[in-house]
Amino acid sequence: MKMKLEEILKSDKFTKYIVAAGLIGIALLFFSSMETSHKPEKEKEIQTESEYIICMENKLEEMLSFTDGAGKTKIMITLENGVEYKYAAEERNSFDEARDIKNHENESVQKRDSKESNYIVIDGQNGREALVERKIQPKIRGVAVLCEGGDDPVIKNEIIQIVTTVLDIPSTKVSVSKIKSE
Image 1 (spheres, one colour):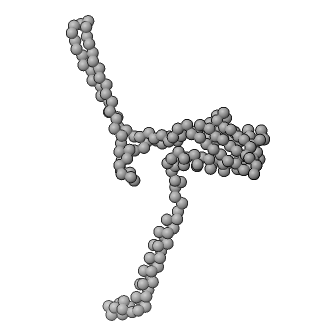
Image 2 (cartoon, helix red, strand yellow):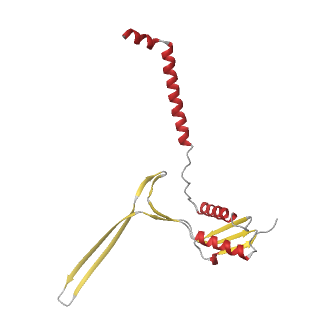
Image 3 (cartoon, helix red, strand yellow):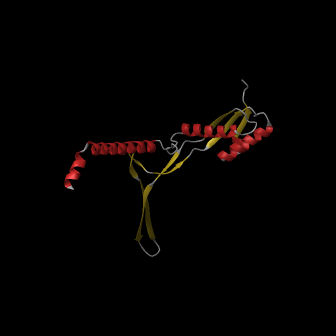
């Protein structure tokens, strides 16, 4: 039996099977790594005010393009402020009270409050950075909508309704006009 096993291991046929199995294994590993690299990534997080504006304008423009009668649409959004960050912090409060008793009627009290805050720092992609607790998106100052149907009062009202609902702003911050004909 030992000799038969040695013959099989030394044969060219066995070597070819081993090499083929190895190549198939490598190919499977290669294809599985390619498949995971082409999986859709999470939507990129918006970092700057200009990226935020462009993203919001594009989404709103796309939505309004499906509104019957709006036609070709251009959007401009202005902001009141930029992106605000609230950083996680550790707070320590201390309270001291000292009494100086001179007599029963004349008592003086000294109180001292102190508060100490330290930001929580973590290792980030660009070195050590403060831990962001909350990101507050900018407030929208106003929206200008230019569209082919902007002179029709019904379409104008419908566009104002859509913009105010989507962006949660009052109608006084939305302007709708007819786009210039080319």
